[in-house]
Image (cartoon, rainbow, N blue to C red; front, side, top):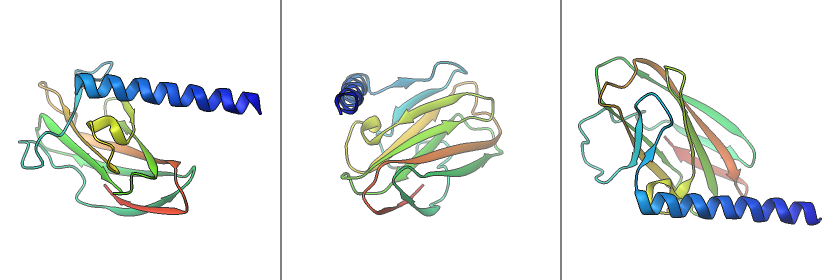
Length: 150
């Protein structure tokens, strides 16, 4: 019982720390590959690729869904927009690049707002790697079934 409380407290502390860091910096720098992940400031055209065009899916607690996006043009910005619209449920997004980097995981507040959406731009001035990018969506805390699009 005490072990579970300790684990929950640790998770809450880490989540609060991440939320503070993200809200202060508004930039999440990936650890390698030249990728910089930032919250989308403007929902208009960012000058890059708009990402997957609205794939609809559902997810439950503890389930993992995989989606992919083929990048086959020279771009410097890739938008990833995971939207479920229900801030009472929590989804987690991890992005696997073609060139072997893992970006994330990202939670609802990664874009600076807790609103049931993770809307990020991935930038690389040297270019976004061509090939198949994989997006991993995990039902981190879901009551019943949550629908989303990415």
